[in-house]
Length: 262
Ligand code: HEM
Image (cartoon, rainbow, N blue to C red):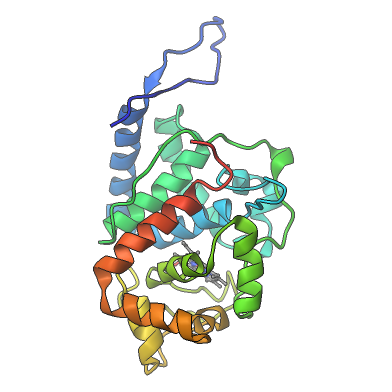
């Protein structure tokens, strides 16, 4: 593994800049803390949503937004799309206090990657070094996708991030995890799969089967079957979990580094 160091930003009252901490040690410590959290509280899905909503504000045209933890500030966490995500940030604060040298932006993305692995999903490669935004860098509301719309809208949003059709479909596969909460998004309190704490390819299996009214299907999920080429990919990933894990990992890495030069 690459050995890099992360500089402690804060200068103590004695004027001495704290010692550099080795990045791999810091990452290991944070990973252990996150696993301990997930053993106690199975909050992995909301962490994946937090990391995605932080990164997904990226717009290539203006090189603004991205995985910079701007979501933790008042103006951005208040966006409708982020309803409920304060819960995730609050769960991470005690961990941040134990690894103060790690940026919030890295911690949010690491919480997602460790959550997916904890749920039985792929081991997604992870690099540290994201910088935390200032409050002034919060993005305006409306950059995240609307679940009541189809491919035209999804394309506008994801293409703006620099992601393509296959990546839209792969990343939507993260809905294999978690569920909707009527008091957050307003959608029915249903999961997409029967085992919402398992990260696997059953999102695609259930999407195709379409035979269980206890499971959720958003318009944006249905949209992934609205075109032949996309439907072919849904079928592929429904049949081949390993192919999904491999391709999902690559798309997830890209999402988790939007707007960052690592
Ligand atoms: C949950 C919409 C893409 C990960 C949700 C919810 C909605 C939604 C409405 C329910 C939130 C709640 O009520 O708690 C969308 C739309 C997308 C999209 C329209 C456009 C394609 C993604 C992506 C990821 C993701 C790209 C991650 C890579 C999740 C997870 C949850 C979730 C893990 C469950 C959260 C929980 O259980 O607390 N999404 N999403 N979504 N989303 Fe998405």
